[in-house]
Length: 307
Image (cartoon, rainbow, N blue to C red; front, side):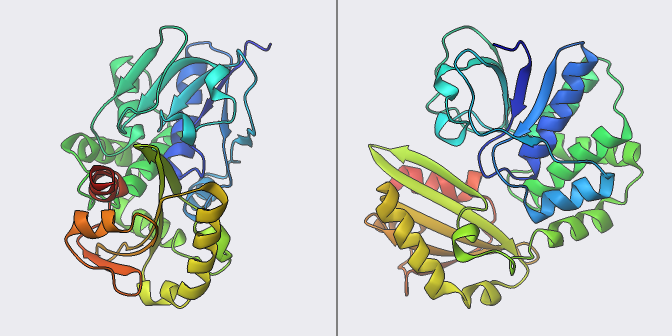
């Protein structure tokens, strides 16, 4: 077994997962460790915008980990969101900003989880704490992740630490955050090239509660009605996903990043969880949620509590 340590974020990786993997790789290489950033899925359009801006390649795809493989998890901890074979891997470290669930290791490890808006905010703090120089590439990666996860600091998950990190990283990167951020976020709203099946899996998080599997998938847009033109086909592939994987509830969230609202399409046997949680009735399998943009803070807790 190779002594190389793989660093990766969750399946269906978002900008934070990819950028944090690359930044963690740089941090550990500065310490002389043999590490390599990997990814657990395709790179989305928003993340590709960041990579193209920097002129760097995405991490290599990792399909599964072998027994005993040393790994570092960033931006996740739940095994059902991680690499195939993760149960038998040797987890060395976790850097995350999500709830802790379905997590068990064979050996002690370094675990750092903070209630901030982005994993890269924690990594920024690690660089500062260790007196390690932040180069422009790492600054761009981290600020891009913060912009993505906090929707340019408009998400309710945003903390003062995210704001401070973004401001200082922007100075290092010499970037106008608003101009760059809006262009980056808009790049992630180009959904036309994706099939309906790809859309519902672009950014889907799978969870389980009381033996019931549920999925909350999310896409960003600047025009909700444009995405809803594909509603019939979206519902067909969601139903197929439900049947194939025995899912009790599937929530497909279409988030308007400019107006900070979300339209959800809800299917499955447990749709009452959404109705009960948000205090509204579904109409044609849909519900409009004003002011809702965050899956982690505004969607997941409500569904989890009422399932």
